[in-house]
Amino acid sequence: MSDPVLLGDWHAVSQSDALRVGQVLGATVLDEAVVVWRDSAGVAHAFRDRCPHRGAKLSLGCVRDGLALQCPYHGWRFDGAGRCVVMPAQPGQDAPEKFSAQTLPLVEAWGLVWVALCATPAPVPVPVMPEVDDDYALVVDGPYEVATSGPRAVENFLDMAHFPFIHSGSLGAEPYTQIADYPVELSADGVRATGCKVWQPQTTLVAERGTETAYTYWVPRPLRALLTKEPGAKGEKPSDVIMLAATPVSEVHTQIWFVMAMTYAKGQPAQPFRDFQHTIFMQDKAVLESQRPQRLPLDPMAECHQRADRLSLTYRRWLAQLGLRYGVIPLA
Image (tube, rainbow, N blue to C red; front, top):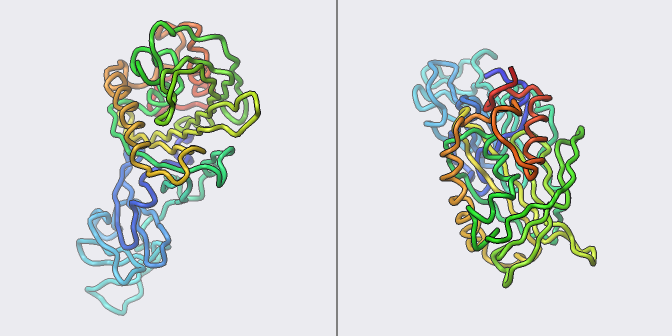
């Protein structure tokens, strides 16, 4: 995989809570096998999932002595820096540098473990949710396995016109189908749309009545998007900020992760909010997997468009400007 736009980006591979001390997890990102593990000090590490000795998957191994990942085949052990520190068949022999496992950049943010496939630290910033502070409760949900491309999944997240049909009774309802015009800005920070208004019968799990809701959408990276509920007339904080992170397993197989930040969820159990998000996304999943082509076409003439698609069209134009090739059908 040689798409430079995505190689240097951060991709979610696990919930932080799911990667417990001493645990080893395998994942696939951009068709590449990776392994993440957590040592006894609580530090998470990421390697390419291949032992340099005979190519066995390190994710089939285990953590030994709390500080080294052991290959399942011949027991070679690798410390957090990837150095081979033990070769059981030749105890006491120092392993040369070429015997090291290939390490990958890793960060933990917003309840998720993120890796990049470039050998040096990723050139893009660590994922952020700028509005979110200690007044918000975080609920992490996922992964959802979806047979579609990452850009298709992101575009669905940005689309309000489907709410009355796919999410009838919750995020939308007929006859409230009209989407008013809204401004979209394309800048060095990505794509941003403000004042995106839609009438919703139940905007959140705790909502008791329908209301017109205004959202801001921000797409800072090709496979990551944020939805923020705009503050009301009194200028209070946004009650909801939702991040969608699409991790490309392959060009047409994607894992979807959600990070939900809510002011009204402080002190509340997380599972009901996950259940609500699960219901919403499973309604999307069937339609997402039905779309053809699975890769997102960047030629504006490839599909038909309506005025409400201004955000998704800007997103497609931005991907073309970035030179994205993976998960899309590029411009001729």
